[in-house]
Length: 488
Image (cartoon, rainbow, N blue to C red; front, side):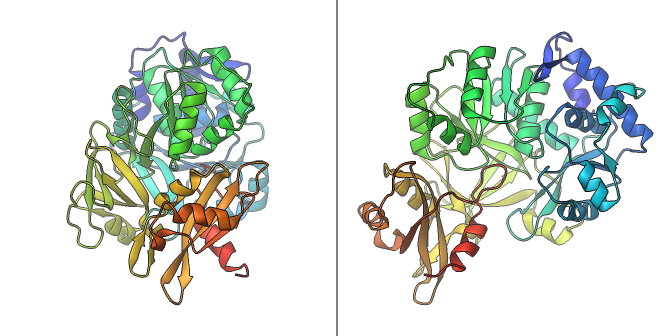
């Protein structure tokens, strides 16, 4: 059964709004018709089952329709960031061997290949529809997403229709999705978080999605209030922006039943501050491109600040010593390994990388964490971000959590730099709270009162902002390169 068929087979009200964008409202009946025409247009363009369709389009309905239309034909989509340069797009097109591409006009002009997004709306509206749904085996490729994985250059993670369906079924249960839900969608559509977890999660439930054209914190909260939304999925940056609004701005969020955060760790201080100000407890969860969402705090039950919760239905977790591969005891730090129906079969065209990442059905995440006495998982950082100073392990997340408790610190990134004496030295880049200028010496003294000496930063610098990717993850490699290029 195809992924799109899984969604359409659910008992939804065909007259219920499915997707809203600006003044356009598509019911489920409307969406089905548009997806049928998109599939017809793609079929006429030559798209066949098993092909890869690259999509570099503005955030909008055409992207949604073409993506769903490709799935209905048994093809896989490769969504690409609008910000990618033509040279970057060329790399992904070559590596993916994409059979077809619908790209920004300037990308098409530069590369001399692909179909331009110009005139796309009219072309889709005029297309002859194909009959839906069509059925395909669960192993049918559905979504190609590039990720750095645990090491090295970006690799194409190929998610099958079965992988995606497994994630949706698990979250439907874990997050208590219903047809009455209304999601305010502010995430990029070229990432698994925004495309699968958010958009497809709502479609699978037969719920309504309102796509926000551009995130603005005050406008987003006003929309949650005005539209009576029930769900919001964000990254830590969104919650920081909400908290940065003037304290006298009040919003009625009584209809909201769930705020989630992912893609990067949510500082415990932000978790507590959001609850104190808005009366909502953020649900933090954990996932990867290669596995979907596999850990989540509960909808009903305690949501622990700083924890990503327990396994969702169908997902399996082991925490192993990264060197020996042996399972570690509760409370001990190890590497997270994941198994279950949502785990990909491998990376496109990279058998060696696939074999290194997936062993006996278990995918090694590269993330380090531990299980507490209640069975909740806590992350302490990426294995590659672990700092070994003087032979002792320093977990950046622990140091960051301490510095974030300082009232003049808004954001912080801790990393290790080469050191002739200790092997690596701990350093910290700090973004001050607006209007404040904390003294680095005072911040270091603050850390020394709360951390063992070997964990304390040997150097601390104020920065205007931290380098982040589109999903809000701090790019420590870029920060490290910039730091090493600066005079000590």
